[in-house]
Length: 70
Image (cartoon, rainbow, N blue to C red; front, side, top):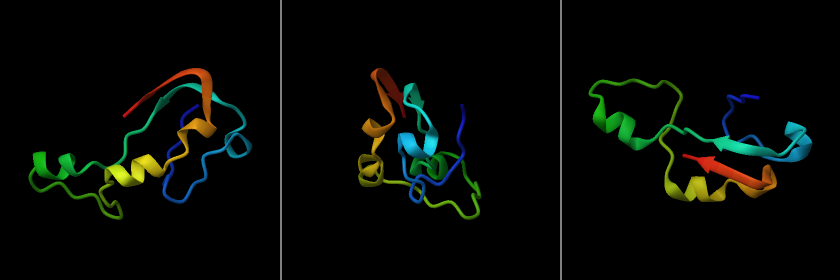
């Protein structure tokens, strides 16, 4: 399953996603993208900071044995 969503607004839960996951990949718009690539434009996307990542309830959708990649 792949989900392309604004995780600031989407509640991570088994009820919303239907299952728990053993592999989770989170690729938010990092500030490094803007700094490394001159002239990059991402309309409507704001960079994430570590506090916003910490606020995600990954445990709610992670299986007992799982890994999360950032």
